[in-house]
Image (tube, rainbow, N blue to C red; front, side, top):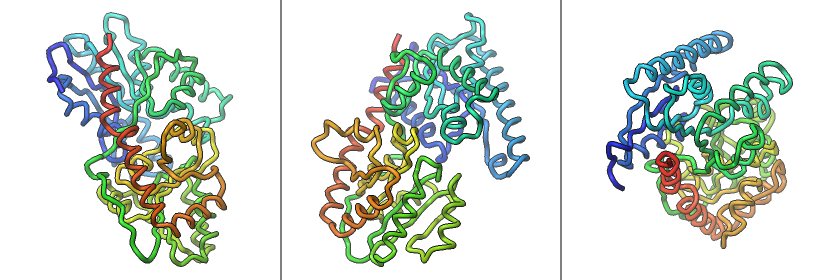
Length: 384
């Protein structure tokens, strides 16, 4: 790529964490820097850190709140102290409250162009998906108003699927031209391709995730129960989150054909587990959000190149309708019997697993890799 010139300055403005817990931010910023297209300067103070995340209950909530307030004030103060108004700004996730604060500035202090990586909507996650606030309550209405104003202010909003783009426009009344679609960024060094080789013995079924409702962990557990009579099929879960009480309850009441590694693992360790897996599981929840997303786990599985089974969502149907081959095996969402049957089919058919493994990696290269994502993002940033 061409090297940056004096016109292509880029300010990274955020309260983001550059860690494996937020891979899209970490690896997108690395890709932008490695492109050589921009002279990058960063103003960032993470609104979370290890100290806040290791606390629990009210103490954690209070510490997180004040850390977030301090981070936003500090970042805005540093931004306002700049000698020259930036030509272009990129705001990684989470950027809603920074964008809101920028929108309140007088015109002479505002940057010329602002591109924000939405990743997920705060209102959708907090109110619609996880029901942490009631949708008709005052706090939820304030949150929606703040998020709408933030998105109105930005020049371009980056999301990862066409379905998410349509939803964002509908939810906040945004013009379709404001939202662009680019794949997420992942650790392609650790999640590198390794050819799948069939082997005799146990068929290893892997699921990794943060155990949120859209994953449909209950469907996976029920499928494991249905396959408990198959000693040649073994499940492994990696991750922790909102649905972990359900896993704990299930493990206490079942003869298990399942292992659970609750502590979250670094990319190197997860990549090793994917490399050892015969079948990898996507998402199977029936919530609206599940219809719109392509989760990180799909990226990781497909980058390594393994057979994937996932729910037949709107994203999957619309993305693969014109493809000459199926990149993933699919089943109806929230259907444990269908999932168990598909797992059994793949366990009994090594040739099909090999074919699906090759298909998933081909799909990653053409639709989910860093090259198409970087091309779209740089186009947004350089647009006038």
